[in-house]
Length: 364
Image (cartoon, rainbow, N blue to C red; front, top):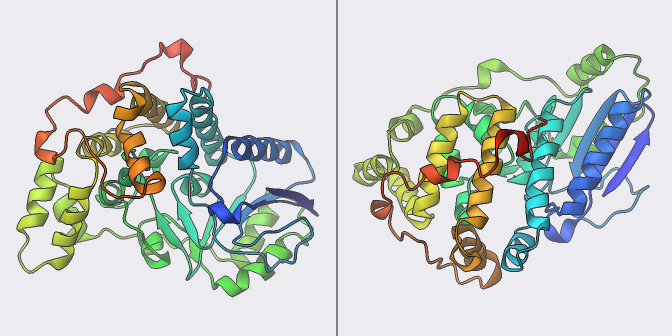
């Protein structure tokens, strides 16, 4: 990771391109330290973050742009779970604290969301003052694909998408581009990717005297969110407003002359049935929660994902095995079908394994 202070700007470049800038525990700690240092530095008026798809070093030309962040390092999750490594618990606790820090950051925080922005990458960017997407942006919360749920505050920011888009994105893990990101309230402005290097360089060369100066400059040179662009999607709402996962899938499968609906049903049939139920409940609970309460809930949930069953029986460990380790793409979900998930099975994921005063995120 490259951390620089240029002029009045604190600049962070995620620089692990071979792993699509997937977050490791050390990266989470380095990011937290950098953000805390910039927050305390009176010279720094604005902080910006980007990713790269090329190996870079400090002093690299400004053209070093590319994929933002593909999420957490799921291979590490798999290895640590099998080894009962406490670093796995540390990762989630510290990542969620980082997400909270970003969402409540004291200075304008600008996310250059070029390329892949998924999972943990969304956690790094959704709390930004300005979220910039490009024609290359590929955004998703794809955690159900590995038997997990959309964490890093996903319950909070997805549940605040218009209508029932949050349920749709959370359950399916659908990849969207810049247009949908703006429509769903998950981005503020779209710029041509070719313009990002100049904006990044210019941001670092300005003489800002106040936060108001920063905000005015960003408005003039990058743009600002257009609230009228955020709209519901009636077709999505028709299905994903339904009460239960089974109701949603049944309606999608019964849709006449709607290829997209049937394709979506096929996707859901491939996901972990149990974690679909957990995820739907997560989004709907989170609508009434503060960010801090949502992150505490998600920390409870991720504990259950890795500790309720043995590592080899965990839906998440099995999902990662099938997708990223053995790559056979045939996870053995338990229960195997949506129809086999019994009432109450998802409820266990929302019980806290800690007393309130002992919760690892109690200080948020």
